[in-house]
Image (cartoon, rainbow, N blue to C red; front, side, top):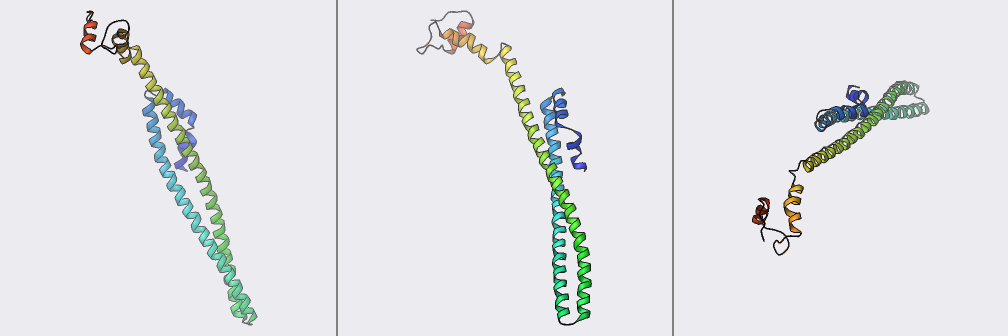
Length: 196
């Protein structure tokens, strides 16, 4: 089925390698997720249609099965009443109903098998989407960690400024009552003046 073409053609390992090589792996992953969500919607519609067809054939099969039993009882009652013509007609209708019943049974079994297969593929597709979402979260965490590391190494980070002008000055020099300095005292320290 064309709905599951991506599922068959693109394995998750190939997908991961493409994402790793992409210029912006998060955007690439987001696009794959959108595509897979669309495919998932189509797949769910296909599964629902197949299940509806399966149920339709089951109902038709059960109706014909009930008709076969009814015609058999009618033939038996007619034979006991010695109404041979009526008994013969009931048996002929029973035979026709049995043929239809067998056709509907075969259709039901084929559609049930197809629906079960689609359900399995749908479950696999949902599993792959979950794996891709987890991969995306990992990528986002790695990108954020790399950005944080870059900020810490740049020297313009908040932590370095605090260390240079805030925390180191609080130990060993006079400040306010709690050991920290006011904004004007920090500015003076930055300009090289010692404030008491």
